[in-house]
Structure formats: structure tokens, C-alpha cells
Image (spheres, rainbow over the protein chains, first blue to last red):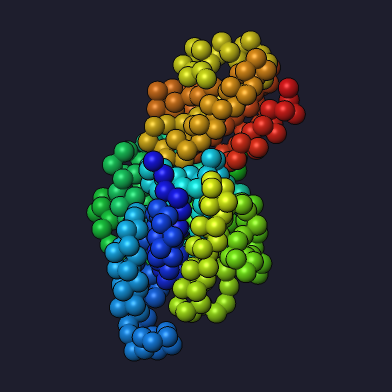
Length: 283
Length: 103
């Protein structure tokens, strides 16, 4: 059984949305990375949040999270890799599928330019999902581009099912199986003909049949290709409604300023709009 | 909704006509998400097109033959030849568009 509202992102905007929606009696599922990994949690000191000056970012977001938990919000830790509008919305996290009737996007700013060749070879060797596509590359060489904390675990998984894995990242990975060679590289490009033949890493070609690119989050515009943006941010109206029915957005993903107070306010508005949308749909 | 074995698939291909085949696997979340859409299309196009599924775990040969490198992949055939393919989760409209323009 699904939730009334699915929130993508467990930062201030997502948590404020959860609190507001719970206040209206809606069931809420928040899907996000561990809150300790949010950019706010790394802020040493936040002085401009109303009434609560001098806190660390971790204290603030920890307090927000506790509030949302107390009100009965459900949480799933992980990355939404795929999304579909179908009798509401369905979201895939790992190999699990969750569904809800309205959607609030609050993923923060996903800073990620695509690598050269990445879009071109998506589905022809480039994959964002190790659990989905790993089996199709058994006994073949693949590279894993590690841009997220859990990427080493996914690389280990690919190795365990018989892929010949090479791990590529700018920084030394933690928790990578010792049998997997690690290549330090920052400048990457996907190369191929009909399908992928190599990953170019700092000028050297690593021959492979598949490239698994694992980032902290899949961009909302990749999850919802019809989502309208403006200057790299999701376009919303004053109700925080996007151009897609039943889809709302809040926080850093909608634009400047990238501030906690703005994110919280927008999350609140997005949730009330989502509740109104649900009440109109099923009175 | 037909779950194709290799033999069943080849037979259907030989018979020609319009076919839409969803390559999937149980361990693939996005595939499970697309499942109900494909089932719905099978009903909607009953008698006009063959809509079926291939489990890449059970029918690896078919997956290799068609170079399926990411699932879900939906491949369209007409008169035994591939005419289009869609990789990844897409709204139903992306599939009906191909079906309708090839009926």
C-alpha cells in the first residue's frame, strides 16, 4: 500500500514538507541519503535561521529530522534511480518500488555535469543501476565511476556476480574489495562505437563493455524528462507546483538563495499544495 | 500477456506482424515498475499487436542476440525486423506512439 505523498530529499525542504503534510493527516514517505551526508550537516555554524542562531548545521538538520520522525513520517534511505507517473507515482530505490499519489521534489542542488559520451551511450553500455544491469555484464570488463559513498559497495556487488571491475574515482574509496583495482582519475569520458568500448580516464583508455556511473543522486530532470527548468533550477509557481500534475518542488532545487529558511518555507508551501491537490482529487 | 521462451519468441517473430517485447528481470526495480504498464498495453492492443515479456535471466540468449545492455529495454518488431527500441522506464505514451504509427 502506497503513501499519500512521496518526498524526494531529506534536507530542510523535504523535512518541512513532511511535517506540514503530517499535520494535515497525510501519510508521507521521505526518500533520501543519510541526513548526516546533507550539505547542511557539514555547515560549522548557522546564524541566520530565525530564533535558533549559533547552531551547527548538523544540530539543525538533526532537530528537523527528529521533528518529522515524531510526527510519524516514514523514511527510506537510498537513492531514487527511476520514477514513473502511473496511477500516481512510482519510485525505484535499489530493487524496491514505492508508490504515492503526489510527489514533492526536494533533492537540493545536484551538481553534476554529465561526462562526454555519457548521455550518448546511456543504455548502450552506460548504466546508473548496478543491481539492474550488473547481470548483463557477467564475465565482462566494466568500470565503476564512484561519485557516491555507497559506490564501493555496488562495485563489490558487481565483482561478486562475476563482472571484471575497475573502480575509478578522484579520491581513495572506502570499503572497496581489495581484489578490485582502483584508478585515480578526475577527467573522464565515455568512448565507444555502437556500444561502449572504453572509459577514458585522465587521458588513458580503460577498455570495458560497461560503465556504471554512481552519483549521490539522479537529477530530477533525468527522473522526469518533461520537468521544466529555468537556468538549471526547477520552474515552480507560488504554490510550488511544477509544470507536471501532482509534482511539487521546494528548496535549493528551485533556485537561489540556497538558504535553510527559504527551503523550510518552500517545503511547507509545497506540502500544503500537495495536500490540496490530493483532497481535490479524492474528496 | 505472453512470457516468451526462446522458442515461443522465434515462432512469434516468424509469424510477422507488430510485436512489442519488454526485456526485464525480477531483481530490477525499474522493470517491476514498468510491468503493469506493459500488461495494460497487452490488453489495450489485444488482437492488433503482440505484447510480451522476456525474462533476461531465463532467456540470456535472446538478451545477447538483441544486445540488451540495460533493463528495462522494450524492443519493437515488425515483420520479424527490429523497428525501434526504448531503453529505461518511460511513460505509456512513448510505447503507444510507436505501436500506433506501425499498426
